[in-house]
Image (cartoon, rainbow, N blue to C red; front, side, top):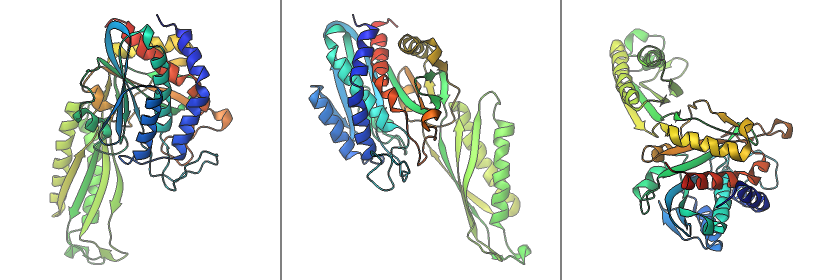
Length: 397
């Protein structure tokens, strides 16, 4: 039998090592699907712990910890490990050593937390039954997403986990707290690209042209009717155009305009329907002016659904570890996460780890050059992850 205090004490005693690993990873970031050094670092750490591993999806790593007691279930713990193409602005001695690449989404903390959780669980393996699968995943930040590639390579096979858990740091939440919710938690994400084709000409003679700038401008507005008049208000939908390229001049109307944007949904059936409305709207608006519009929709990550039962059990385990006052219900989040691919396959729970601390000046958002985290959370985040895994293994479904 493993006690809560056993895990808490181990996690606290290993805090220095966890922080050192996080700082090493932070100083040596690698962008999506190029995590060669990160992968080698993880493998070396697992070798030190005598945890067998295998490579998947090129730079991905999967470790296995088998409890020495008979029976038991299989639980997977996942950490992503890629960085972002961002120039870091933090003035810290462990700042990125690679110009234009930065761990601005906390994946360094995810990886170091899971490595220490692995050390805790390996140390305690004589006292639990079942199997812990450690998933160190590449390429969360870019499509098609490392999760889908890991799944294709068999990460959910031999043995197949009954439950998968993952965490994500969140500077909006105070350090020492966690948040989760059951059901649809994070949005699907699709990339939208439009090419509006007309016939350019002199800006002083608009009657002689088919103006793609005017057409594209109407399309930006008309697309919002899909959200306001076609989407069920009970199912949040976001459609944003973030790029509009019309390479004319003061007195030149161009031949074409390119637009790019994103669609976020929380319902997979509505998502498919929205794709059709986008295509129909683009065709109709273009036809109304004599233009044409090519539409390209790149289907991205699915909706991240937390299994209600598993989320309740994760919440209970977190409350035991941190106290009820430090565990809250998360609001839905229109960001996207490729952990969603796992959640479409097996019961899953993805939770948020608060890392913000305004008194320490740590409040910058994810994906910003100033992002950082309160490293005090690394004294307990590995233990929390280990405790959740043990709770899932020992508790009957």
